[in-house]
Image 1 (tube, rainbow, N blue to C red):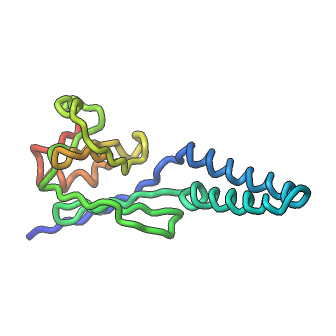
Image 2 (cartoon, rainbow, N blue to C red; image 1 turned 180 degrees about the vertical axis):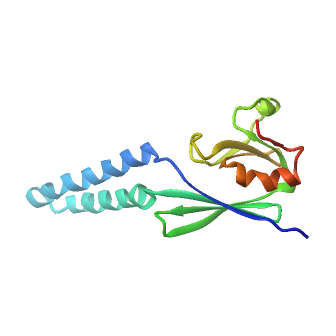
Length: 166
């Protein structure tokens, strides 16, 4: 049994919605402080809620990275928050894969009309090291991944008919 292992760590682009909401809650907390002092102590609830909302929405998820691990015909995906909190979010058995192709390629034309649950574990766009790929899984899911050529090689070796690099 030939076992190949590859790892790839990518950093997701900042989510602007989370950033705006996080700072809005923080501003609400700061503006509630003078009101709590001058008007009513009930504004302390606003301070606590704003600070807590800001922490939970933005600051806790400020830096998001994905780590892909390919081992034994399986891709494991971990989400890492702020370089210290790791959670396994998906495990993909490549024997159940229908196709893996570059996002927007002609090989995916037959899949464009399908209704599927979308799981996005990508950077958000192509960059200099990685390309965004679509993986169709069991006919029910479309998984977006940002992969480089080194990570694709073992998958291409085992599934040449299912992997489309162009």
